[in-house]
Image (cartoon, rainbow, N blue to C red; front, side, top):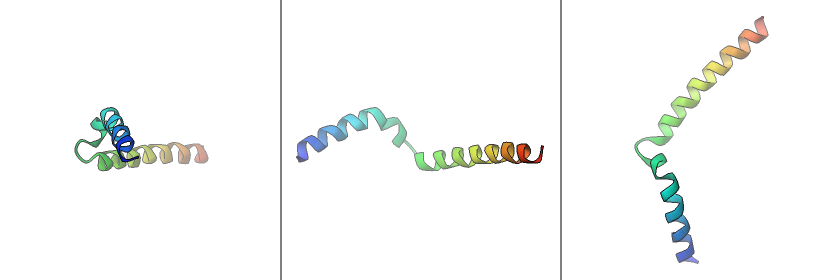
Length: 49
């Protein structure tokens, strides 16, 4: 059980290592906030127009 878990994690780590570098969550949240702002702008413009 444990060994399979470890190998799965190794595979996962290989795939996603680049995501764990630095403050990945912070970067992602900044991007999400930015995107939300843009989206809200578009929707409000549509609603007004």
